[in-house]
Length: 110
Image (tube, rainbow, N blue to C red):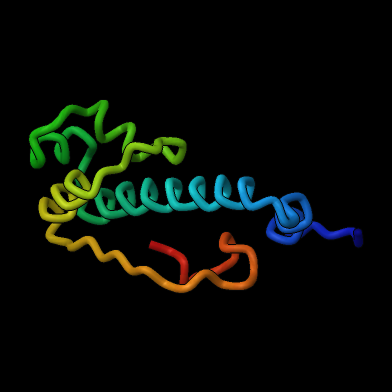
């Protein structure tokens, strides 16, 4: 293995052909991406978590969990409520899996 500081290359070398590990990495990437989308949308709208909570009639702990990259319980209905409150829409696309590591594929982003 050649020396590199490229995190994606290191991940590809570590994962190799392990399908289970590849799936775990992809799930972690999706969770982090959704959390970042929620955080960014609220920030761009100039809303605090408390203000967003009031708009969608939930609790601050729910929003806090949704903005946590490790949270795995994102629901389409909650994402839709958040999107509606922020005058946005949720888009989901099913695309073919790239032959390269999915973590490296911009087309696999949600």
